[in-house]
Image 1 (cartoon, helix red, strand yellow):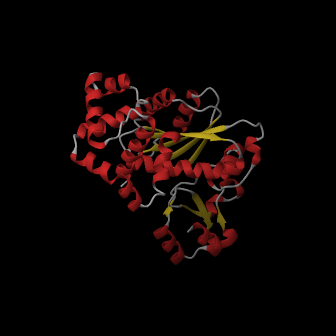
Image 2 (tube, rainbow, N blue to C red):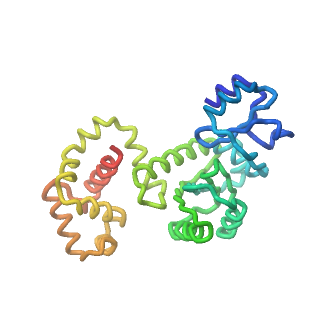
Image 3 (tube, rainbow, N blue to C red):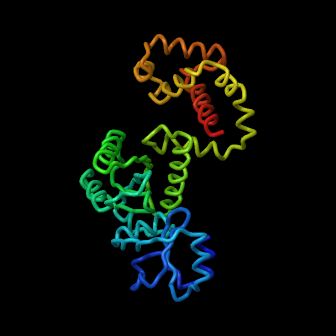
Length: 297
């Protein structure tokens, strides 16, 4: 849709606040994905403005100016411009996606809290009022992510979800990988809403399953779906917890607040009904993808 606007208004459209001298002479909107853009007021009639507001959400305040580093990363990730300057040191970068459930009352204090949490100041990109992308030199682990969530909840009363991305190794693939991570994050929040932290490698199978036709999934997993539907509801919870804890019986039983023997019994009963043993890696992979497929469908 934005391409059609650019084709219609040509040079009157601005996507980068830094590229213009008089931002207040523009009407500012944001796309469905949250990207801001402006159109010169002089190029828009009153009727056209009303039509634009029906399609795009107007921005009541001007988008903030970006630093040179933020602008380069903004263009690289969001617009797909292959600026190799950001990888000139040969070091990988990692993205931490932050999804807020509501807008923050004090974004500047939020920025300060982020900068204080990391040893090296990250590049902070606001895609929209609820979506923030951090560009980091080191990949955050789950412990740091949990600490981050606690700080946001305590200091800003913010309910957030985090997505830890994989390594970005060059400008040629940065936009494509960011887009993939964004898709994976959105899908994971929809299918696994109970989680607060998502990790690229654990969520990627969900994205891959969306490429499989529904009929194929139902054919491949029909019998498993039926067992999960008709069997003990504790099976699904036990299997999911077992996989989440790396197929470690002791840790999974502890997380379920049951004795290890009880978990062993549940897995044995599942194997009796399906002929599939979740303790064998290849069969566990099949079962795990089946659990994801059921949620997806």
